Length: 198
Length: 253
Image (cartoon, rainbow over all chains, first blue to last red; front, side):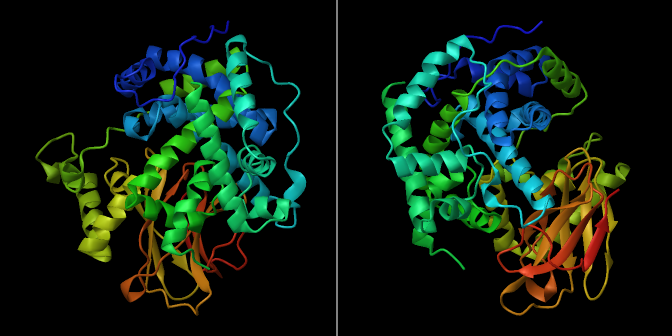
C-alpha cells in the first residue's frame, strides 16, 4: 500500500534554520532507514515523473529512479547544504542520471541515429498528477511564460530532451554561443520568477 | 577547440541542466573552483531546474518502492567527507585496527598507491586535483577509492607501448585508472578512456598526459558490472563511441 507523500514543501533551501529535509538526510546519513522511507515518499514521485519524461521507456525509468534513490542513501553523508536544498540535490542527481542513460543508449545504438529521435513535443499524456503538486505545476507553467519563446525552447530541449547545448543549437539552427546565453538567461528568469512567488 | 576563461561564466545555465559535453564540463568545473559568483549562480539555476522536475510529479508504484527499500537494506553508505586538512592523511589512518597499519595489508597497499598517485601529480598538481574533485558533484575522488577496504590493483594488457593499471573498489563502485609510458600524440588526437559494459563502450573523459608519458589519474564510476576499462586514440575533444581499436585494456570481471 503506497504511503501518502508528505505535504512538507521545501522552498529552495538556504534560509538559515535547517529544514525538515536536511534533518531527515542527516538521520539517513547515520543509517536510519525509516528516515529514508520518509524522504523517499516525499521525492520519489518527482524523480520518477521527471525521469520518465526524459528516458520515456517505463522500465528504464524505474531503473534510473531506483539508482538515484539508492545513491541518495549511499551519499547522504556527502550532501552539502551550501549547494542547495535536499530536493534540488536529489533532482539534480536524478536529471544527471536520466541524461546519462539517454546518452549512453544513444551512443550504443549507433552514431547515425538522428538527433531528432528523442522526444521534444508537449508533455507526456499519461502523467498522473498528485493533488498537492497542482499548484506547483501552475506556478512553474506561469513562470515559464515569462521566458522568451527561444529561451523556453532551449531550456525545454536541454532539460527534457537531454540534449547537449550543441545538439540544441543544431535542432534550433542557432549558433552554440546563442544557445549558451539562452539557457543561462532563461533559467535566470525562471529562477527569479519562482523565487519571487515562492 | 577551447573556450576562453572569461567565456566560461555563460555556461552556468547549460551546466545546471547537464547540457555540457564531457570536456566542456571538466573545464567548467575547474572554473567553478575559482569563481564563487558562478558557484552561487549554479546553485540558483539548479534550484530552478529542480522546480521544472517537481512539476512532473507522479504516483510511484508500491513495487518500485519495495525494490528500492530492499536494495537500500543491502547497500553500504559512504562515510562522511573529512575536512580538507584531514583528507590527505586518510589513506594511512583509515584502518579498523587503528594504529597498526601492518596488520591490514590492504590499507598499506592503498597508502602506497596514494603515494604513487601523489608523486605522479607533484605537490601543486595534487592540490589542484583534490580541489577540482571537491568542486565536482557526486563523484568519487581518487583518495576515496584508494582508501576503500576492498580496493584491488589490476594490471592491463597492451597492444603496443604503455602500461595501464587500475585500482578497483566494488564498494565505492569506482576505479582509478593510470597509464604510463604512453607516447605523445600529434595535436588533434588524445587518449580516451572507456568503460566496457554489456557489449557497450561508455565514454569517460579524455586522458591528460603528464610528465614521462604518464596520464593524470582519473576515476571511472559505475564499474561494478563492467567487463573492462580500455583506452583508444580519439580526436582530442573525445568521441561518443570508439573510432579505433583499444591500445590498453584492464579487465575488471
